[in-house]
Structure formats: C-alpha cells, structure tokens
Amino acid sequence: MFQFLTNRILKRKAPAVVEAIPKKRRYSTALYKPLVWIDCEMTGLDIAKDHIIEICCIITDGNLNIIDEKGYESTVYVPKKVLDSMNEWCVNQHGKSGLTAKVLANPQQTLAKVQQELLDYIQFYIPEPRTSLLAGNSVHMDKFFMMKEFPQVIDHLHYRLVDVSSIMEVGFRHNPALMKCFPRKKGNHTAKSDILESINQLKWYQDNYLRSDIPEGVSVPQREDAPVKRIKLDIAEDATTTEEKQEVSKQETKEEETTEVEKPTTDTIEEEASATGKETNTQ
Image 1 (cartoon, rainbow, N blue to C red):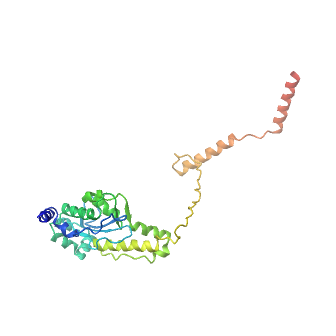
Image 2: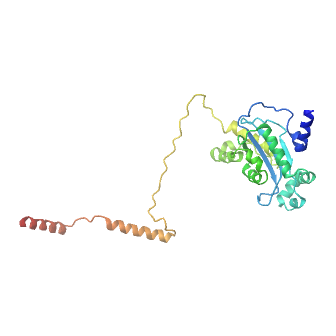
C-alpha cells in the first residue's frame, strides 16, 4: 500500500522524472568531484529575447567516468511564432536536425516542468548543493541563459565552471604542434552529441596535454618568473596628445639644466680668494 501511494505521489508531481531517474541509487557514497555537463540549444544568442529549446545533462565524476549513459534530455516548448523569428542560421540548423519539429510536437514540456525534472535528476546523484561544477564547451553562454530560465538548477551548482574551450585556447598558445592532433567536434549541434564530444575532448586533454611524467614523491621546483621590467615615464600623466607630451618633455629638460650646479670659473675663484684675504686682515 505504501509503495502504491508513493508511486502515485511521484507520478502526480513529476511524471517524466520517474522515467529519467533509475529505480535504485547506483552510488551509496558521494561522487568524487562531480561534473555536471550541460548543453543547451537556443533560438539565438541574445539573452534578452532568445530562449532555450533543448537541454541535455550528463553527469561524470572527477575522472570523467559517465555515471548514467542515458542522462537527461528534453526539449523546451516555445510558441511557433518564437521559432519563426529565429535567425537564418538557427532556422536552417534546428530545422535540419529536427529540433524545431520536436519542440512543437511536445507542448507538455514547459519551461517550469523541464527545470524541475532536470533539478530532480541532478539532485538524485548529487544531493549536496554547490559541490558539482557546471562543465561544457563555451559553457558560460549556457549558464547565462540558465540563470534566466533555469535559476534553481544554477543555484544548486558550484559557481565555478569547467570550460573545455578555454583549455583548447590555452593549448593552441602553449603547444600548437600537439594541438594539431586534438579531436575536433563534428558540429551536429544537438545537445547530447555536443556533451559527449566535449567529454571526449577533455579526456584527450587529460591524456595528452594535462599530464605529468614526474614520479610520485619527487618534488617539483618552483617556477622562477623573470623580473618585471618597469619603465619610468618622464612625462606628465595628464599629457594626452603627442604635442603636449613633447612640450612637457622640453620643460622638464630645461628644469634639469637650471638645477645643475655651475662650475666655478677663474674669475670667480680669484674674487672668493680676495674676499677671504680681506676678512683675515680685518681680524
């Protein structure tokens, strides 16, 4: 009887969550440094007027082991007029992938419903708030939209991010030869495929770029940075134009010349000696 009532309560509150969450908890202990990988597909990149129309979440531990292969994935319903107002790129891409049709075919997946489903899914594996980091490719943009439309989910996550694209940019600058081999994304622009590609990219960075061959127990010497060369500017801070800077420089040069001690001439020495002799005779 208790099980029957429990099932009815779960179904009444969030029917989609029952399917998304496994029957039994797979982990009795807390995940090691969990990462919540999220990717969103939007109607555009203008946070003021555009909306999330698809969202996917896959959770990994700190070693990039996927906890639930299925993950959570859902469209988010918006009216047809919103989809019709998308820019040309979004119209073509979302139409080609079938996302536009999926959004219109599932009006029951409202923003409020999807947010609750996603929050329940994350909390099932990571119940403790602010212990998991949001991860993805250029994930700051996803976070901006989620702060507007999925604030409860963002509030449950840590404020720090793991942005794979940032590691890529650093790699191109520090080791461009190695980065010629890194796995490129196929660019399907579906939320789940984007996440899986991002996870694989970070695994590649972990194996090839973010690695250390230093044996355990060996101390690593601290890096000695070169001293910063400070340049003294001999011009006034308020000199804004080239002419003003040149004028200030000329004035300072004249001041330096006038403050120098003049070398004594022969006439000056004789006058000083004569004056000294007069003083002696007087005494």
